Amino acid sequence: QQIQLNGAGTNWFFHNTFSRGLGDGMQITAGNGNRIQNNIFQSNTGNGIFLSSGSGHAISNNDFYANFAGNFYPASLGASNKNISANATFSNGSVSNMALQNGSPAVDRGKTNGLFGLGGSPGGAGPDIGAGESAFTAAVLPVVASNLNTSATYTNLAGALASLVTGQTLEIV
Image (cartoon, rainbow, N blue to C red; front, top):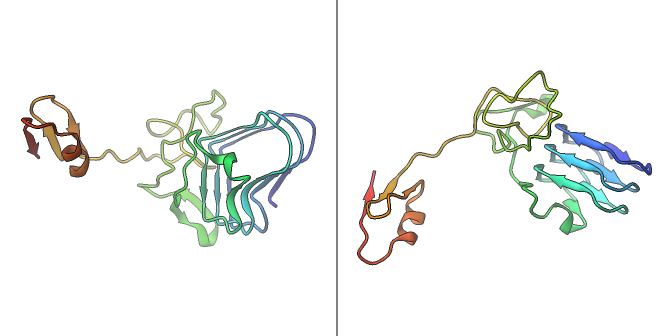
């Protein structure tokens, strides 16, 4: 494992990248109330996070992807809490360049926690998930349709069609 939390205290882990490690990205064997936010756990040979004891952990706004043994153990550990499971798309992960590429799903998806400390404020609309802060902003999807009756706009045609009520008019942009 890359990091093992086995003390009785509370630990905070913000803005780290755990990628291509042998074993679990993080293993929690003791302690309560650990805060694990805005981290990437990708392509480790074990789990992204393995939890064997403790309680009250705040695990949110992380990206768990393609960890060989599973993204988190137990499975309920990473449910919801704005955790995502998507390829973070590093600039060149094969040579340990873990900077995010433009269009990465980890851009602007972090939680503002008051402890930013990565050289100032976020480069986009919010902090990125992972160790480095990019200058990119999250992709804004273009409007593809508008409901002329309700003024609602849609970024995909399927959503626009699903929302239509008989008698309403949809304008395709």
